[in-house]
Image 1 (cartoon, one colour):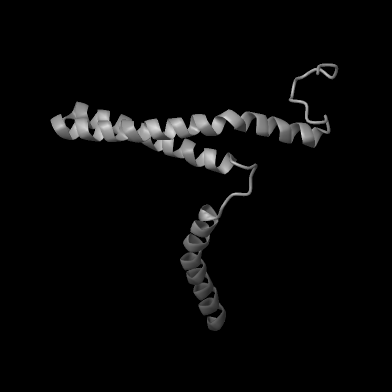
Image 2 (cartoon, rainbow, N blue to C red):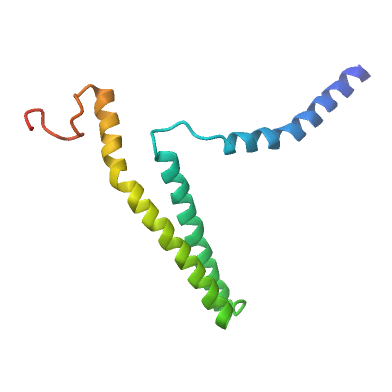
Length: 122
């Protein structure tokens, strides 16, 4: 009985140690998705992070935690990064809609016609 308890506790300890490692590996694994969608998702995540950081910076300024030149420098840095990310999103987005429509059309067997296009239209 004592051996069983020791094995169960040991197994739980090993699982507790390995779980964060396995979870981190799964999060860092490249996603298998339509071409370019994982890159777009990464850009969207970066955009959201930058916007959140800018909101927190503004809140800190209102509280008086960040003032003057520090605020200006951080704001300019965040805005510069946001511009780069937004331009990259715009560049990725131009062909992404057509790519997704082509994938959907191929899956539906409509011969490559975009979604919503009438059958007789050419």
